[in-house]
Length: 166
Image (cartoon, rainbow, N blue to C red; front, side, top):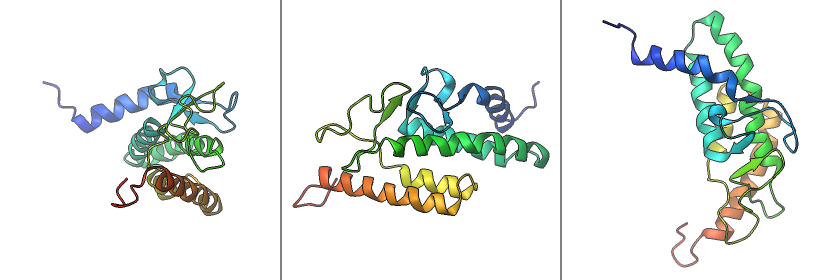
């Protein structure tokens, strides 16, 4: 009978596959980034990048101390770079793309007022990066300024005037 716990199985799976998701700067991406599951073909997605960063950073936090430091040091630049690349593609109105590719800064044209823009997870993403010391506080402040611009854009586009609902 196998006595491996679900947590151990998940940790093993993450460790075996993490490096497949690491992508170096290329094309329009000026920062290293995570290509979720390594299968999208050099693409960056809003939700997928956040959840992948969360899984990798939390897995690293739960490793034995000697493995923890090495794994987290490897993950942090890619987790931070993913958010930075998304925010680097921010439009003047504050919108952020849902998805990008090395040769396409906004696959779904989020700059169009009627089109959907990135999900409102950038604040949580930044908090995750700060929690794990993946970005310096000064960088965090600059990213927060851009996240606030995205929030203002979202409110201007989608908030119902009479109810205030999004």
